[in-house]
Amino acid sequence: MKIGFIGLGTMGAFMAASLQKSQYKLVVHDIRRDAAKRHLDNGAEWTDTPRSVAEQCDIVFTSLPGHPRWKRSCSVPTACWPARMKAWPISTSRPTARR
Image (cartoon, rainbow, N blue to C red; front, side, top):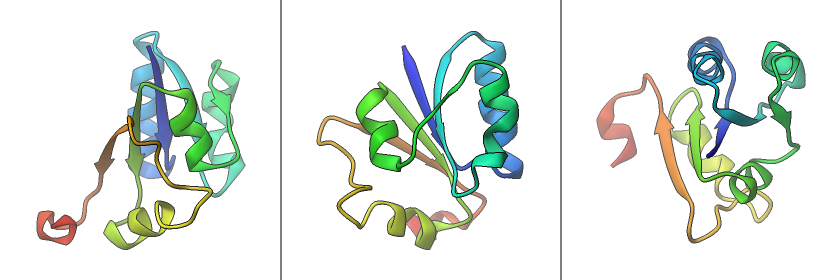
């Protein structure tokens, strides 16, 4: 199973690292490539767009700072999810922000 991870900030970096420690293959993306350095050094694959992550993975986690950024990442043609995709947004924003 290939897992995608978009957003490797404070929270996302630790979650992605935990998945790697459990031997999952990761495909990662962040607006800053240097945020992915430790994951790439440990075998993760980099991709340039959120859509590319989704096209390559069975499951995608997004760890973005709030619903507006998640919504923006999915609102342009290069970032739209394929219809079959299961995406799991992870955020510290209020639950009502996603409704």
